Image 1 (tube, rainbow, N blue to C red):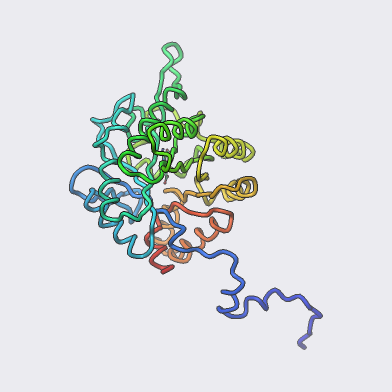
Image 2 (tube, protein in one colour; image 1 turned 135 degrees about the vertical axis):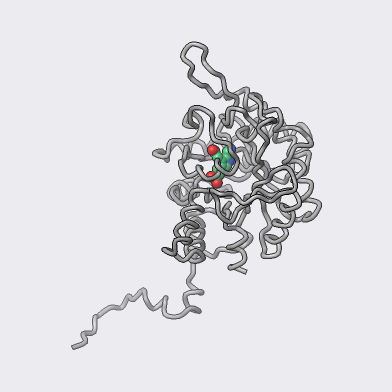
Length: 333
Ligand code: PBG
């Protein structure tokens, strides 16, 4: 009954044992690839985040403890996102460059405890801005339309980046999508003798609904309007290449694509055009979808976590920002 096919090429031969699959594996995820985003807040309390199960807004003490746990399993890079008290938010977002603000104190605390960890900071105004936008908002007195002012915002971002550099950040990471901010930040850092501080640019950051749980975590959703006049249209990819070209010309050290999973083609497109390292951000909505489906028992959380991260790396990312960083590093060993 059994019929032998005349098949000289049988791809299954390379899959016949775990050891052989190990030999032919093209993409290997390691803890060294992961960047752990951490939320921080004032005070002594570590508060679980309702919209992001497994994540907390950490006190500075809790932050150092959590970074220590991630460090123990091999994570060597972190990025901070601050929850700022409503009373400190202003239209000019001045708190973002306060030398004793929450972020500079977090940088100093983590650097003191783990001098060899890479500390990355987010540069954007939304946590500090009473309008909840990444830039300075101007309301048109006639139409009432909101305008996000590009050049005025860039000068505030430069002060914010410098403040983070002065506190000891290794990398500043503008996530605001204003035009020209990478070059301007590079110049401000260099002028102040911080030429060794790197810029990880959110090169292709899309106006994505996947950021919802993050905005819940920080209470940072725009008070009015949306972010479509600065973040990219999810329908576009050529535009991502233009952004990449510009960031390269302005001196970015690493380019980022965000979100990651729904934008693998963008990661790949930039990978093919640019030689700089590429980061991808598996954002809060991607994380939450996996957590929720796993909590309902419909998927295996650990397997889907690793598969999603492997897919992002396979697409061309050298490093991945993920809320799974500690958990994934724990599994990867
Ligand atoms: C804001 C910022 C956002 C994220 C990182 N930095 C949200 C936004 O642009 O509205 C989202 C991250 C996530 O969803 O995990 N500068």
